[in-house]
Amino acid sequence: MPLALLSPSLVFLVLFTYWPVVEVLWDATHEVSRRGTRFVGLANFSALFADPTFQRALLNNALYAVGTVVPSLVLALAFALALNGAGRVRALMRAVFFLPVMIPLVAAAALFLFLFLPGIGLIDHHLARLGFAGANWLGDPDLALAAITVLTVWKNAGYYMLFILAGLQAIPDEAKEAALLDGAGPWQRLRYVTLPALRPTFAFVGVIALLNAVTQVDHVFVLTKGGPSDATKLLLFYIYEQAAERYDAGRAAAATVVTLGLLAALTALSLTRSQGPEAAR
Amino acid sequence: MSASPVSGPVTREVTPHIARWVVIGLALIWAVPFWWMLVAAFRPAGSGADASLLPSLTPTLANFAEAWASADFPLYFLNSAVICAGILAVQLVTASLAGYVFARLEFRGRGILFALFLLQLMLVPVVLLVPNLKTIAALGLYDTLPGVMAPYCATAFGTFLMRQSFREVPRELEDAAMIDGAGWWARIRLIYLPLTKPALVAFSIVSVTSHWNEFLWPLMVINSPDRRPLTLGLASFTLSAEGMQAWGLIAAGTFLVSLPLLAAFLIFQRRFVNSFLASGIK
Image 1 (tube, rainbow over the protein chains, first blue to last red):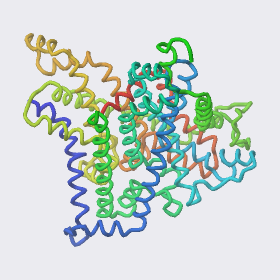
Image 2 (cartoon, each protein chain N blue to C red; image 1 turned 60 degrees about the vertical axis):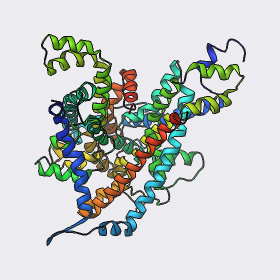
Image 3 (cartoon, helix red, strand yellow; image 1 turned 120 degrees about the vertical axis):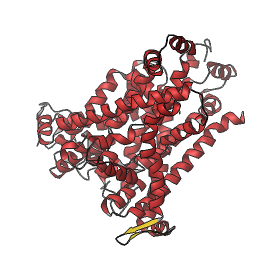
Image 4 (tube, rainbow over the protein chains, first blue to last red; image 1 turned 90 degrees about the horizontal axis):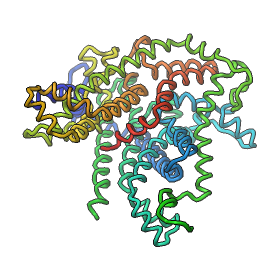
């Protein structure tokens, strides 16, 4: 009986979650050619790690993860602290920060295409009016990843704000009252009451943000296609390229296994971290 | 700092004035891309003021008309709607059944099975792009809308959400129905589902939002232009309009694609916010 009711879900989970993992492990350790399939052990992985483009993708993704997670969490905290509570202006501003979450990432990329346009784009045009020189934001290998990062922070910070707002509301009033009665100023209350209470929220939001840094690459397709000179090549885009453009199944599978390993490690880290504070008390 | 410490100040968080002004400034910056989209979409083409943030004195709908005519947006809308509705319809069934099992039935291996379900939260289909594409091809679903939908038909998040909500339903209600001879499907349909409507709505909002906005997986599955969802349509439209430097057109196209969810969000803000929060209860 239980299995009968679970079977509709299980059919899809087996087809699109469990089996693909087995398949990707198989593909990563085999070589498929016209002569047939043969086991090659870790050869695909050593070739993968020897590929400068993959090394670049790993480094890019690490930089991109740090560059998106830290600023968006700091901003989300600032937004949440300033906009917690009632009032029309606050509600309006919360909506402003949340709107980017509601549009597709490719739509955000379409808007930023003009923002980043060299010379006549929104940013350069206004920089010029203020007397600053512009730049080829998406065309310069030194700037392109940063430009993509800015777009991501704009897109996601409002989403993380939501969870922090919920976390703020879950802090018991007694804790805040006690701190007030003890004469704690605003900064002291932030430091000793609010931030410690938000730690589990931060652990959770941090993991979502890290997962997003690996799984969201839609904007790369519209803005840079991984260029210039691999500057914005992220892991998932690399996998896409290997599979869809170079037809290298073994390489793509090996890169997928590495990505899955990273995601698993991040998730495990989040589980230990988010349970940490409670367990310590 | 006077008055009673209990009412006023405690409900507020720390908002020193400087911080508040910084956040107001950031809100203005955050609004710029949207503002530019609106202004540029309604500006007559060829006015040479693409980067201006001031609205045109002679607003026009020409960009919308041209965008609507130059890409097959009505068809893309339809494809996206079919994809979202199809995924949601199947998900509501699979998630309710599985949620009921994990909420109410005792059997050996339940813990392990539940953990296996939750694994899907991490193993998102876009990461398993390549093997999933092979499966889709083997099933004969390549370049079809069902091919876009299939990987999402089972949902760990939905199962988890329904399990949590079903647990809140008093068991006595189900027992009474059982005595009256109601089978499992009747019990789920007549007792559990009506009492967990908020969870069903929350799940539906999150599901539709994420699939409406999805790009990479449909990009892999869909080949024919007439089966593209909105996101794919917008991306190819943007890339061709970029070549023409037709920024008003791009703004109008982006506006068209973003409008349904933006409008729904602005009307049902509270519901959306609560739904997204529910998506964080993992």
